[in-house]
Image (tube, rainbow, N blue to C red; front, top):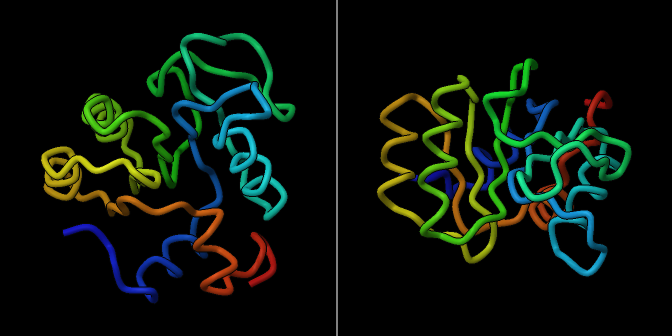
Length: 144
């Protein structure tokens, strides 16, 4: 069952340091572009993942093709993909040992969420961390 309690979501965001954003965009008109910047401004390291712009940079970070290329431990995989494409990303998140998957607003995939939970990952679905952080009063990273 995805996390829905404010305390659980606040705790996940407070403990996270590194977020992989799958579906990150280099286009300022895309929601992922703004959300990535807001998360960085809050102190998170956000690693963009998008096969269409691999090798480019978004907000100063190198864009990777897939989660399997990341060498750093990932606390949250933030998924900016269609609901039907989220399952593959969840499977990659499980494979790299991510601690949690976060399916963005409008992204709902119950089967993928169940697989993630069965593998021990925390799941947040149909929410946006850039909305939840101020709503829940999550302190900037490193200032807790």
